[in-house]
Image (cartoon, rainbow, N blue to C red; front, side, top):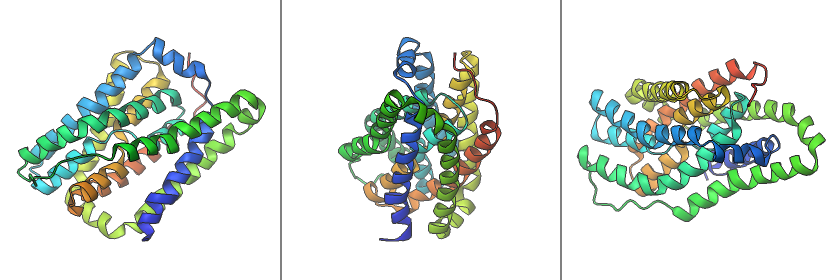
Length: 292
């Protein structure tokens, strides 16, 4: 197993699961029931991730006249919204963690249906149809969501319920640990994938940066336009601009059998960590935001 595979298959999922456990210790059931009673934030977040994000991806691919391979690679990335990394960044930015986790769970399940349709259209539109049937690993995707996100958060919430003093005491240390893990993962990803990342930045560096900035900007603007609370604005901004790069790379390499299509994901990973890191640095040092 290569260093890149060890990082993506073992280190990253384990680290994110630990972080999700810490997040769970900051949550109570009311955080989720509040979202159900007032679903506007969820609907805005889903619209951004499932509709606006792929639309921006298509627009940029056409505007930059990308080669068919790079264009499809960009669309693959744009169809894979959310992921545990967005939950981590939301936590450190002091956004609404319950909203972030809910959006990640919903979009992960819905994208099992939307990704094949969007990619089939992209393959046909950009002239790279391969005749393959796009079938996502549904069981693996569900297990990934459960093991990395749902189960650790649930355990954390149980700890919060029965050991509230311990949970509150661990809030700051877990946030510091989450920041440290984020930095270590960023460094590890660069070191393990240096060759493909250098190629990616040369070929699609600018277009992937724009995808990241535009989708984050749309998330912020739409959330503000509908007058959401600041914690929800932060969550939607992050969820709109932080994509599930792991799933995108799996689709490109294992389903479409084209490593080159994974190049935009490599470039996007750099920008994602940089912009996410800037948000964490700016918002993480601010006082806790009132969630009411």
